[in-house]
Length: 181
Image (cartoon, rainbow, N blue to C red):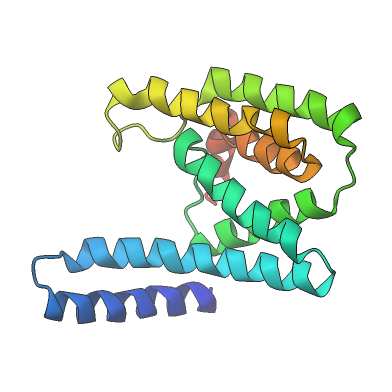
């Protein structure tokens, strides 16, 4: 909780500083965006440091780009707390890095499952933020991102993409809302 307060305070200070120099930008919007960026950086740093200490830095680097890229287009569940989001995201990205999966056995099947989930669910959790006429485009981009792994054949990307695809189930969002996370 202290980390969240610090991130929010830092985002607020930076937003006010930017607003003083560029008054045309809303401090509230700046704070929101800066908070999102700072929280993403926290997750990236946690993953890169832990994976770096265990000799998996390049795998982690791949994951910290692939996960948010897919999430940007597919949407997914949202926690009320940025701290919980950071911890859960870091955990699942690290799980994808360290879980041994053979691409040609389990990985290929899991990649197909991820594509199928996104064909059904993507985009999720974007209602009210994006014009519905763009939903089919977001779905196609999401599916193409995951389908690209049929070329790369990365077991790590398979797991990262599957984990992100699972977050598009509305059932998980309902559970998070019920638990007030």
